[in-house]
Image (cartoon, rainbow, N blue to C red; front, side, top):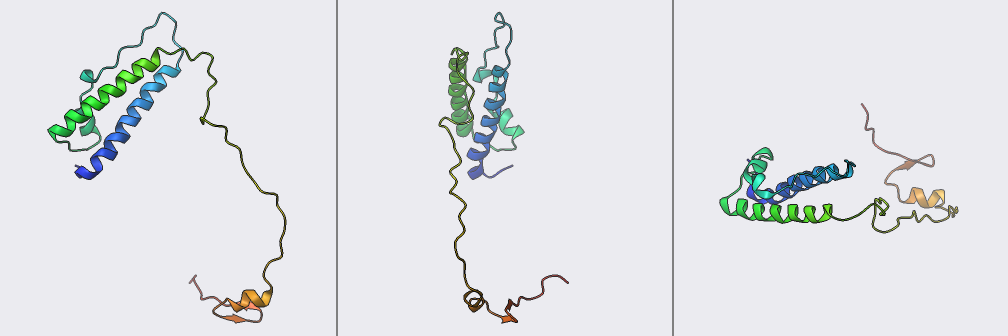
Length: 133
């Protein structure tokens, strides 16, 4: 079992995967008459999810995470009622543009200046130790 310090991170990751996969179900377009099954936290056992994630939880942690999971699922239920038919799918909330500077050449170091920084040089080359046998 994982140490308790890592349990919050692992629990968050497990909940994020669950919510992500649950929301993926919403991406499919079922017939209008189809009603999604209501997800509720009593139907999801926090201890079972923790066991699958190999996380050891105390009773206090399990109670806390069960209530947090319940609030997340209630919020997902609210989101399912929204009409998003006119909302364009996006990857980012704000537009993202590549900000690239113009490719302009600038004068570099002279050979003497570059070799002055090298620990060893010979014949206008940097001498390095052999790294391949």
